[in-house]
Length: 377
Image (tube, rainbow, N blue to C red; front, side, top):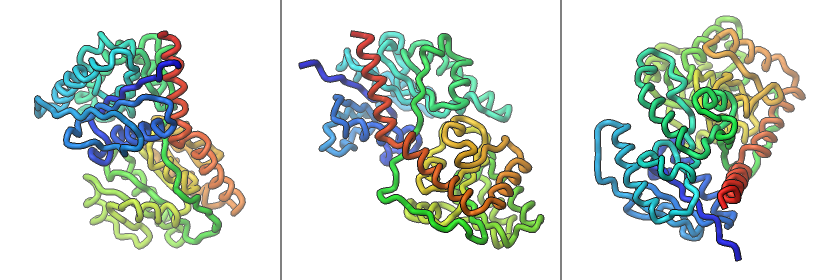
């Protein structure tokens, strides 16, 4: 009998014990792979108090208690990577799936086994001078990690081009493995495509990088242009600009929901007609996939991996920082007949179902693991 393939996932944490995109990605990917029962899976994380995965999945967990702390984020991550490296010594033949900065210390010694997922590449997409300066050490560190890792994961779209610009032999080193979601337990059947007013949903942080300024300017201008009775804007999220906009904007058709738990958010996905995210930079936003899983047409900026998810078949790709482009997309949707709106809706669900669910993406990971193992044997 052939030896089972072993993969060690290294991460700073697992959702919901630690909240964030990398942490959620770790949980959902590992759970999907474990359910296939074709791998021996080890997860190294910092939750040393207790195991975090369901015991029935037979996942080996190594919880690290951080033994060195720093107020500097990067230094703190390096200290943690030293402990991760020590834990990895127990698995000399396993493939290593590194999330973010978790595999850094001594990567030169183990890089031939490392698949590195840097996720959204925010450090390559900084906008302001201040943020660009902050990004310099991240670009240097990740550049070093990219040079040592055997494979580097891109979520797709423009992110692949960004990586190719910074990785020697990028064509052979980069692998595209998109983000994913779990579909709702029961498919939502969207039946009404003639709602008045049309309900437009935004879910995101109230911050400049999410394009919230662009959306608010668009909403106010469209109201002033005669759409006040025809459109309704529903905004979910909080952030540094939340108080500013809720105090300044008093339009009855612009509704600020603030934070929404899963039940409230899923209700809004069902009740609204189109989803909008005029973000300035992204990885592969989960909220877009979630909206697609509720058959919502999408209006989103051409940035990060958004064009992997959206094109003219299920929505509109808009220009970055452009109120005109966002107004045009909303206006184009507004004049569509019911059949054309229904077609956009159905294509959204079909695309996420076929390409961006965790069973589909886990299978792509498994194929990569097998390929790398056969090459190394």
